[in-house]
Length: 306
Image (cartoon, rainbow, N blue to C red):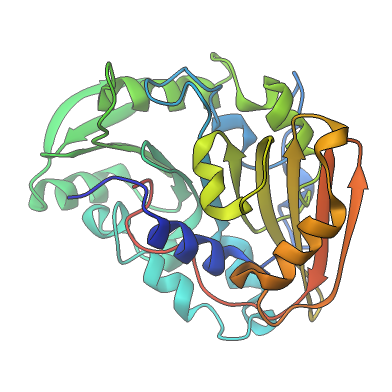
């Protein structure tokens, strides 16, 4: 099973992520825990480890986040309902776990590493499903029972799962990746939000984003365009009633590297902002942001964390 991050996959993820969001008043948004050590109050930050905590991520990494529970609650605000998002849960790790869209609340996919899923599923149901898909029980860690397949590992407990995929990086180990994600989420590891570039980026992502993709390092070039000295990039989406909002952010190495006009033109030419309206760009220090409204479409694509 290929695990490399390809341009085709990058564009598919980006196009799927743009202009999707959450209503700020939806139940659950106000209960997201505050994270210290830099960064904002975002639902996924607690599981994002600092670059280098997993081998192969020393220069940064890209993640996607989807809040399926909020999407279900706002089905009437989505152009195609939740049908496309339901397709997300027909792929790894959901299919192997026997978990469908209605029993999944949120998924954080860390590209070329793995991710973390929450939902209403039970370990007693997921374990047999994994075993029927050629996974074997392989010990436990911090309350998660681990199941290892040929190229993937899944840890599961009631209401949560963590997963890792094979990666071609020196020193990389699937079990170690899972342990790092679990420890980070529990507050026992260094977090992405403590990284200066990511923390700066984080300040320009919607607090109530239901769909987001972003990160730091070389992989962001697949999304962020051909700009020099870009240290981080993200795009996020939210819904405010019947209006969908999109916002992207480019974090440059320095304020003098920012060219707002070029970033705005990138957005107008990008498939990420297709059919967007009211598009505008602005600068805040070393960050260039683009905001727009547009149609909702797509999910984050098959084979999460690949």
